[in-house]
Length: 251
Image (cartoon, rainbow, N blue to C red; front, top):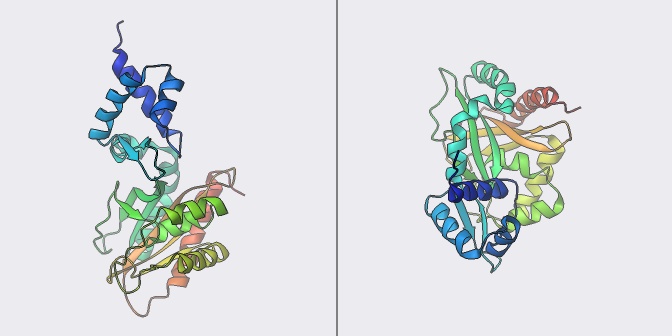
């Protein structure tokens, strides 16, 4: 059987990038793959054009990282991923109980990326769907994951974040965000009190695997009502997250 060498090389590149948060420079890719820079360059330009790969120039040196389109293609089998399968029933039951919408998300290139969504029959309609990406500073899902990262990872995440104001409730200061993360870590859940839109509130909590690492977060989203206590909702979401984490082997 004859294999297409260029396609094989592109797949090798995507596999490498998928395992690296820092990404690779062109020189590094050329060295690791033992292939001429010119050949790698042509492949990278095509992958970037198709949004399979991102070009990151923030450090002054171009580094290539896995792109959103790669995730979206991979999400075609997202329903078969163990993490989603393990969490699905808990998220469905909780959404129906709260008459709300539940989500699961992961971090991808410093952005909250939604990988699961369930809307109860009486929940509000939300604009977020599987594949939607949001900033870590205004999404409860993002706060829930970032709060449990290392000090170095938190500093790096904040440095990469553009603290855009979406409503008058959005956190726009890195110092204020750090204080919020400290509270999230202490309580075990995060809140979005009309920070994305004035109509929605959310509470989120992290999912831990058997090694104690945060692998995702879940949230419950509802319509803003003045009588709703987000801290009470946060406690409930944390309990669901803890059950899912236990299924993953977290003690």
